Length: 239
Image (cartoon, rainbow, N blue to C red; front, side, top):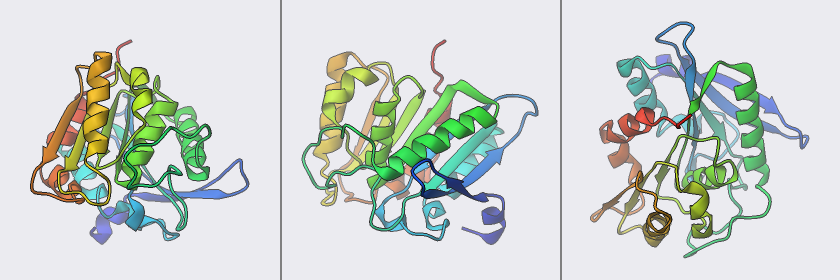
């Protein structure tokens, strides 16, 4: 990421109710003054964990911000950072299935607090709240929408996995999934089975793209064009 763009993204630390804190970055794009903003929470993968409040920007920040500027969209984007040694969801990434934990992980609880405080502080359009994530963050994004299914207008899930038993909660949620068929870090079956579970509920708004020649890294392909982001920002919750 170029230095000029990095300076446009606020570096923040949230004091959390559990006594800890959450490092996160916030980018606000205002193209139309006084109009409400959409809100996009993006969760990074395992390789971006740490304490620098910067590594989480490496993959998604430039394409997301470029899209917002080109399309002149009012949007707030939140990039929280999970500390080394923790996960957004306390489940093994290479498992063939998992059950949504009864309680959110420490860092998911902090993300939920960040989300709530942002909604309370900014003029956010409640019909345009989005979640997204890569790998570990893909698991996190699934976890987030399953815990708050009524809050979100759409989900961008990149090589992650969710609890298929939660699919009925997501019957009305548009979801854009991407996975590599050769993935040996997070089984491709995680996305396939989630798509099948969604279809069984009658969810017709979701899309699954499988790259036959790619392994774990499908995020480069995802952000190589703007199809996924174009789709995401077009979604609007009824009401």
